[in-house]
Image (cartoon, rainbow, N blue to C red; front, side, top):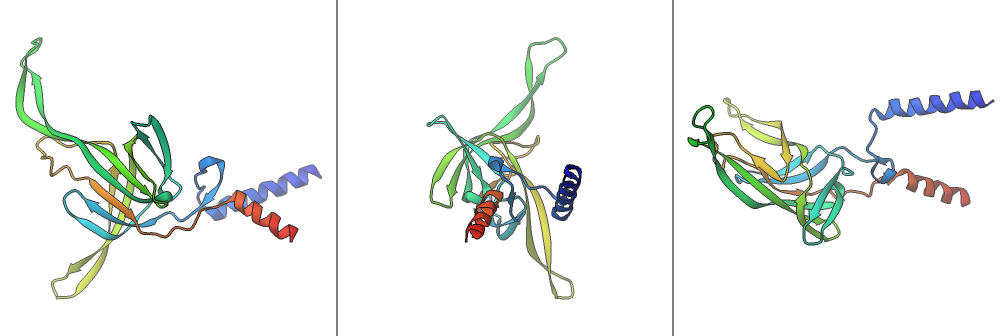
Length: 213
């Protein structure tokens, strides 16, 4: 009897995994089912704006912000955020130096430099709470948006384009680049009215309520 029950449970579990296709992250030890992209408006440091874009990242994805004044770390899910802004804390063009010759302790300037920049971040949550601090690590985002292209025959074609970016506390450019060329995401505004994530715990509570009724 126990063997039959175990086999049945194994079959049910395997069937569920096949239908889901992907196991969702489990923040706070709970299984969360949510859509894999959010509608956003994005502003870049060079003035480019994407007013109607999609950000491919689950709302339950967590970022960690350290607030220096409070000596406190905050874990925030993307689905809780109304807007995220990068603020330039420090930036400069770093000169490239090399040793004058083998065994020498003298360095000479190569005539080249590279840009670098440090960011702090201001996060406005959907409940109005504002958290300003530093990201403990960067996180990648993939954006997609539509662009209207004028064809040679005069017709207009709408194309979907994608871009991959990393939002991080420090950026570094290539030799010869200027600070303006080191473009970063200046602000992301989340335009979705996201429903609260459905968890297994809530499903269980709903089932118990129905059974009691």
